[in-house]
Each structure stands twice: as structure tokens, then as C-alpha cells.
Length: 619
Image (cartoon, rainbow, N blue to C red; front, side):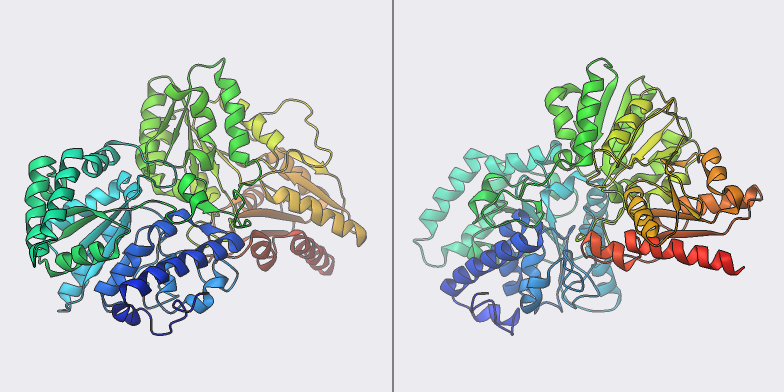
């Protein structure tokens, strides 16, 4: 860590630093970001682009008195480094270490816990209103990436804030990217503001001339808005009730400070439009900002690439099916590379629709396509799809439209932590009448489920983790495969372990551990959380054999809860235990650490099964 970054008096000490020191500090921060993220993984490109902006924010405002709300939190690492956490930054995203997102529990400088996009303006408006109601006088600043503006909640908040006139500053960090390149009319509008040649050329010439005149810069600031309005004609934010300022070079600390100080003096809501370069200062990230947005641990000069994901395998199979089925189309919400939808889009560009960070709209538009006879597949991470619960329930399940949901990153997700865990989907999906809920345990089974989904006449959800094995040990497919049909993978008379999805591999490994201890465990792959394979469950409970269910989902309302309800309703009185995620949020750690802590790894499952047998014997 560089000597300037080790200053214990940050952020207050920033105010007394010279221009040369600030430039050196920015370089130290970038080196620390690259070193830490290359070791721990995390969001790199977005933070590299926000270095000067974050420095300027802390020089102009007084945190924690003044409140910063970072949308999503993808650009909050620099804020952490400058607010007393530099000495712990090496623990970023590690068990017991700093979170990869802002957290109220972590620091008084984090004004709001974040993790999902498009929430910052609403939260900041709430903080500003609370300030006013309590007679306080601090500033509230929302830092929002332009990608977040593809989400509808931003406009609900902008409309409310502008109409109310509440004193609030919204900084739009415009880098043309969210995770993948931004799409939609808003992105095009900001591009027009950035790239208006007549405006930028005239502004540059005027600034150069006036800088030669004493005290002319103040006049330039006052003239800027009139010049912008004349040559660009921007009235979007003004129409919502905001004062608009920009575009401003987001890598020029002095220019940022001037603009922030003007915004600070305003008595009305302000939008400050800042233009940055994602990955700024690190050539690999500048050249490939989408690849370096969120990366796994990698050596600093590698490309951060990983293996083939289950999502990409799913979409590759879907693309093959689309060759002969012209009704197949795909809808995604700003994650085409993460979900694998970019593979489909390259082959069928007219049948792939990235709607931006707008999960509700993605699902609703898929409902419309299905109602018109298409076969839409909606590819969204498990943690983000829960934002569209109402659209799924009312507008897809109620009319029984054949929309298939592909839930990537289901189950425990590791270092992204509490806000991103995909451990609630089995519960919220099972609650929807008419929804088929499937969870493959291998890539081979995922392909079978995708093929099956083509002929379904009702909604279906297929949830899977980032990675799955190509096939399970000795996996064979015999006979017909249909909705609600599971399979036994291993026989054993002492206990039956009925697992679903990614937990099946751990259940098989647990059976091997038990075998070495003289315990013979049967292992069943349920495949479906809804409808349940009742024949499989009756077989699992045959001869009063105790049953252990295993899932990477919350225990409340999940697969195990469904099995318990089935046994109860049918008078099956076997001893049953549920191995699942407890009723609490799971913090960041590696997936292996999370499984171990929750006793959902092979050793933990074996231990649970052995205790279940022991309790059965003592009855």
C-alpha cells in the first residue's frame, strides 16, 4: 500500500492535499485496487473509473455527516479506501473481511446497504426527507452509474424528488457501461449530451479563452448552462424538476470539485453528469471493461477468465434448438455475458432482447411475446429475478403463459455475499400456482430440461448455479423424462438422502463418506421442487427408512418444506430432517466456506445423515 493511502486521518486529510499529492494518491488507489481484486476477485473496472470522482466527493463534502449513497456498490471500493478501511482492504470479499458492497453494519461512512441496481436515488431521497423532518442541514449525494438509469425505479425517484424540490444531489457516473454495454433511449440521450460536437467544441474554446482572464472561470460556470441549452437543447432532467450540470470530465479532480461546490450551494435538487472511463488507468480493463467488471481472482496481467458456466451451456443448447424452432427467443436484463445470452444474440440477433437493468419490464415483455405465440426464455440471475415477483405471478402464472425462466447463480454465490445469494428462488417460485420448478444437477440434465421446456404449455423455471459438472459419476438416462420425475442415483438401506440441484453432487460425496463408516445411504436426485415426484419420495421412505433432504435454498418454504408437507399430508411417518440454508442472510466467503459453515458440504451432510440414523435407532 502506498504511503499516502496509509493516512489514518482520511477522509478529512484529503482537504489539505496538494494537486500533486492527489495525483499520486489516485495512482496508489489504482495499484491497491488492481492488487487486491487480482487476489480476491471483485468489481474492478467500475472502481478504477471512479477514483477521481470519489476523491473529489470526499474533498467537497464531509463524510459521515454528509451522506453518500452508492448505487449497487460496484464503484464503492475507493470510498472504502478513503474512509478508514484501507488497512483492512486486503480482506475484501473474504470471510470475516470487508464486504464487496456498502454496508450499514460495516462503517458509519456507508449511509445505506446496497447490492442491487437502481435503488440509490430512492434511498437518498428518503435520507434527505428524514434530514428535513428532523431539522438537520447535511448534504445527501446519490452516486449512480448511467447503467442504473435503465431501471424504472430511478425514474420513479427522479419524478418524486424533482416534484418535491427536496435538496438532493444526484451524480450520474456516465461510462456507457453497466456490466455490459448500456442499451436503450436513456443511454442514447446521455451519449448525445457527451458527444454533441458543437457544444463540446464551443465550450472548449470558450474555456481556453476565459482562463486567460482573471476571475473569468466564475463567469464561465454561469454561462455554461445557457450555452448547453442553446447548442444541445437538453431539457430532460430540468423537466423533472432538477437543475442539470454537465457533462464534466470525471478524471479531472479540479473540475469535479468546482461542479460539486456549485451543486452543494443549490437549494433545489441537482443532477451532475460526470463522464468517466470504465477501467481508467489499467489498460486491460480499459480495453475490456465488461470482462473486468466483476472478476474472479486472477494474476494481475491475466485476462481473469474462468471456465464455461452452466448459463452458457444452457444458452448454447437453446441456440441449437432455435435453429429448428423459430418461436424461441430470449430476454435478459443487462447481463448478456453473465447469463450467456450473448451467445444466443450472436446467432439470432433479432430474437435476443437485452432490456437493461429492468427485470420487471423483461418479464412483462416476455409475457407479451408468449401471449402472441412466441416461446420466450428469460435469463436473469436468481437474486435479481425476485424483483419481478409480481409480473411472474400475475401476468405469467395466472394466464398460464409458456415462459421459461433461466435462473443463473442459484444457490450460494460466495464472495458477493448477502445481497446476491440465490437461496430464495425455490421458495418464491414454489409459491406461484402453475409454475413448474426444476433444478438440474448436471449440464447433461440441464439440457434435458431445456428440451422438455419447449413443449410445456405453462410457465417453467430452471435454476442452476454458476457451474455444474458435465455429468454426475456414472450418470445414465433411462426411460422417459417428464415434468416432476426424479431419479435414484444410488441405493442404500440405512438412510435416503434426497437432494436437488447443485446439492446432489455433495449428497453423492456424503454417501461415499458414509459408506466408509459402514452406513449405506441411498441418494435421489429430485430434479423438481414443483411438482414433487411422489413415487420417488414414497420409495425414499420405504420400510420406514429415515429421509434427509438437501438443498441450497432457505429452509423456509423450500424443497425440504415441501417434502415434509407431502409426508404429513399422506400419513408417511418416517423420521425426516431438512438440510438447507437457515433463516438468516449469509455473509460473503467462498462457496466452500459457506457450505462448511452451514453443514451443506459433503462432511456436513454425512454428519447430519449419521445423526438421523442414530436418533432413529434410539426411538
